[in-house]
Length: 401
Ligand SMILES: *Cc1c(COP(=O)(O)O)cnc(C)c1O
Image (cartoon, rainbow, N blue to C red):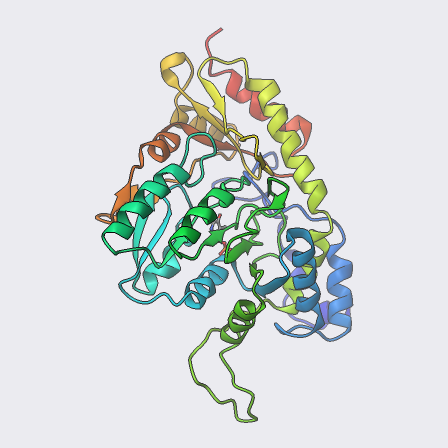
């Protein structure tokens, strides 16, 4: 490649990803959810670069948006630089202003609410249902009824599709419609997930997806905002490209963002999206292998999948109850770490995060219990049976006998 040999910077001299992570290089290290390349990325990149496309504009991001629309069923999609950027645009489109309340599930990653807080919103954290680990519709109904009575409805409700499982968006949407509260669904972890035959996020006013390196498919870093409302996505597109009015000198009636997804990353994403069904099947098979390999152990449980849900099992999550004879979550996590295996606690609920101390909440005990007992196990779609066998064997040694 002439571009490489002409450069004084040796781009081919990097160590292989995931093989030299600190503290010590370990060729056998097993990661939680590393990127899984298809082999088609290079051809896609070469075609894109050969045609001269690099910027966050033109036919490559457009083709990526069309591909996201196809796999999700959303008619209108905007590709952006990250899932967090998609959420930020979503909050802006919903007209969030300082002092507004935003309600979200407490069991989530901080990115769900960070942009809203940065816009001056006041977050309120609602517990999740034990049967899905997603926003509890019964609790939401109680809280919306109470808020309506006090005349203090939230500006938006933001349910989260967690670990590859859709929330019960049909119930949530029905409740929010009753009081005219818009739903922005954080579907960052749920590309490929279904509920009642529809894709995760579909039915919300807006849904945000992520293509970060750890997600089920990746652009390297990227996201998408999706809607069934063409006007909302057109407005988001305007804001994502610095809100330039059509004038040769760029006229501005508001300020926007530089949030577009570059053609280079979109090219990677096009190759990745093509294998999404295979990635879902692989992650689900990994979950089933954990159930088969660990399910007999006392005190172990697995993330539930309600009848209405078809999870991608983006992450395989177990719960550990040491009162029934096995290890607790931290003992298991540490034993795995010592064996060179990355595992992580379930998301620390936002109502327990120091940064949100004092924020109002509704319930929280279910999420707190999942944080105490829940452990995410290596779930990458490239995980080999031998590697998964190592994870299972390492865990099994923690039970007596
Ligand atoms: C990954 C993730 C995001 C953010 O996506 P980025 O692309 O990393 O910005 C938001 N919410 C949840 C629940 C996520 O898991």
